[in-house]
Amino acid sequence: MSCKLDKSDMVAVEAHEVSYRYPDGTVGVRRASICVRSGERVVILGPNGSGKSTLLMLLDGLLQPESGYVKIFGVRLTKRNARMLRRNIGYVFQDADDMLFCATVREDLEYGPAQLDIPREEALERIKELTELFSLDEVLEKPPFRLSGGEKKRAAIAAVLSVRPRILLVDEPTANMDAESKNTLISFLNFLNAEHKITLITTTQDVEIAPQLATRIYIMGRNKETVAEGSVKEMLTDEKLLEANGLEAPCIVRLFKKLGYKNCPLTIEEAFSALSK
Image 1 (cartoon, helix red, strand yellow):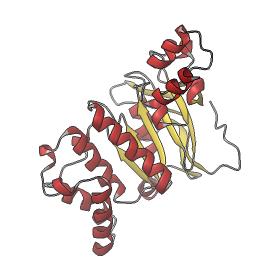
Image 2 (tube, rainbow, N blue to C red):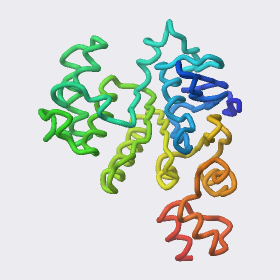
Image 3 (tube, one colour):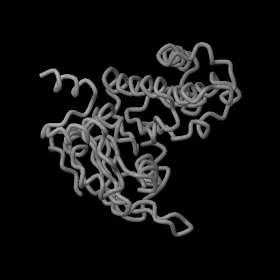
Image 4 (cartoon, rainbow, N blue to C red):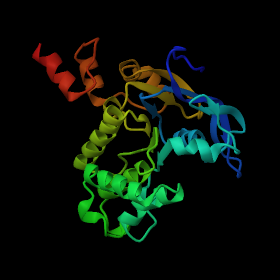
């Protein structure tokens, strides 16, 4: 699967047939490819064990592919330049506990800018903005383990954004979240993309949230390859493709197909509009 974007598009992230095997011999990904233009919202969709998290770590430079390559804004990612290129990238792990390791949330927000030698005054201004944006005022002096799941995720994303990345990689953002926290987080991510032009690449196995987070989808199968790519509607209404790769079409799609609709809605709003007509 090669990069299909027009030459006029500025490509933020490109992975070309990357493969990775862990030291114990476990295959992480196999010939996976993805191409994302600057400012785009893309979801990597796949079942558990399909290699989504490994692919994100390759995109971030945390792992080096044993074959294939990764490019960030056209520059090939290597061990030598990984530290420099990763300044463009923010990576939010699935488990926020893996990211919040300081005594307080405030210290976690200060950590990134300090590592990049950002002037103290500028760092404090950034933290103030992020605290307001993510509604963290009441938890700034708390230890991270005292936070709820939703608060931890917001704090983790704020900590990543404190270094002003141009690309945000988010692994399973709504895992183990209640409905309110899930909706709040999705709104935050879309706000960052729309208002701050951050390129958003998200992994999930939840087909129900994919329409809210993406304009384009890559599907990874159990063979740990990228097996398909297309628009959200094209991918999420192809029941055979989804089932062949350990996924199921969203509930709304399955319902409207049973009702005989050919142009199935993907969200509650679209379903209401279709039924109103």
